[in-house]
Length: 72
Image (cartoon, rainbow, N blue to C red; front, side, top):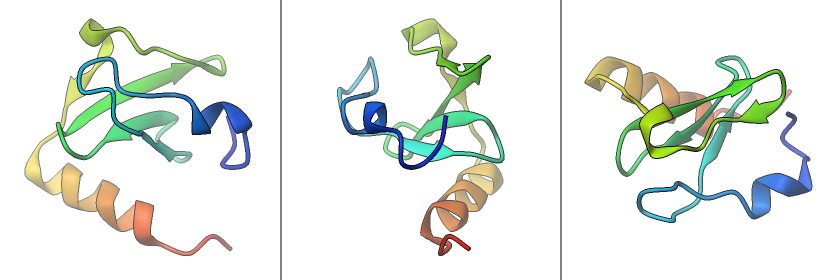
């Protein structure tokens, strides 16, 4: 999955129905509101509620920094 993928505009968290952030280095979609990371396996987002992995405070801050970093 890449940042320009039109699918990203319609994907939502299965729990709060809010937007997700693509973390390309992590191969995951991230919900910063619930601090949940959903894996992308073989290009397919795993968006079942049970697939979400809770992130700790350090990892959450790192993901937020990645989200705000300019693309190069």
